[in-house]
Amino acid sequence: MTQETIRVLVVDDSAYNRRTIIRMLEELPQVKVVDYACDGEEALRKAIDLEPDLVTLDLEMPRMDGFTVLRILMQNKPVPVIVVSSRSDDENVFRAMEFGAVTFIPKPSARISPELFNIRDDLHEKVKALVKTDMQKVLRRSTPEGGAAPRRRVRSAVAKSENESPIELVAIGASTGGPPALQKIFSEIQEKIPVGFVISQHMPPGFTKAFAERLNKFSALDVKEAETGDMVRPGQVLVAPGGKNLTFRRRGEEIVVEIDDPLPGQRYVPSVDVMFNSASEFYGPSVLGVVLTGMGNDGAEGTARISQGGGRIFAESEESSVVFGMPKEAIATGKVSRVVILDRMCDSILGECGF
Image (tube, rainbow, N blue to C red; front, side):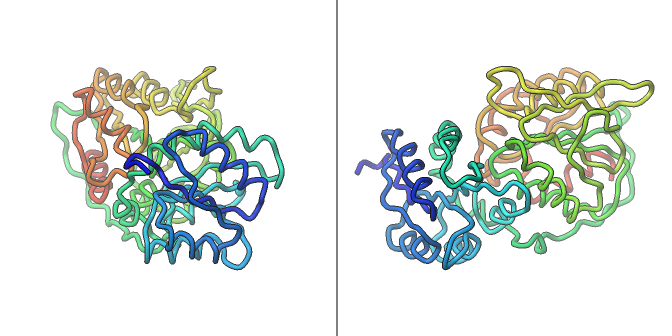
């Protein structure tokens, strides 16, 4: 094996799913599937014995579920884990990320479905991007059951510089590693503040409603999946639906959101660039954009647009980013106002908003 070879363990109790995932993985010349596991106990034993570079993991398995596998694995032999799950109607995939999984890929709910091949491109991209993941970064932001994140006490408002417009909207974009980062930020806000928030987190359809509901449990702000016509309200967080884009329009004196289909061939959805560009158009210097961890360059174009409109941009630092792709590209524009480690992002956002 060359140093560049990516050694993968595939875990799924369905023989069809195992064969299909292995076949897709081995289309990548640098990937070698070192083994597979049919249940949780076998998965844990092989992950510890074989020391793969990456694991694909189903959550619902006999003998030992995926959460137990993750918990023990992360305590003993941390390794990048991609959850391949059909569960979009509950919080399972987000709980898995709290236990240390890096990201997830949705699969069809039927045990035998040719639609499983539709995950090929996403699987290829994530395997290549995540194999060198620093697991200490992942584990530092993992908070099992959402109970470990400290809540932050909001301070009294402070005056801003005369040259700075007050922030009315905070627009946050994220991809791989984003859900735990967003949960950390919003769980640290202890009281409602008079600022609106919008989020574009790269996710497929069907998952963002559960994600918004989960954020809502841990934040003093009101969090919901966005719908066309929702007004941007102070103290509320609107999460762009998976597979759609979030933009803004005027309705009388109000600003409301529009939920739009992506353009043909659009690679990253919900698009951070689309949201940032529209936010700059409607909020000008009163918008703060935040680019969190993620692969690719989504958000870089929007970073430049917000800066041109007089707004400000924060980017997560390489020190805490699970994947330093999106923040790196945003910083490369030369338009980022501040580079911030995740542990200080909530304080920095609230401070910029005057709290």
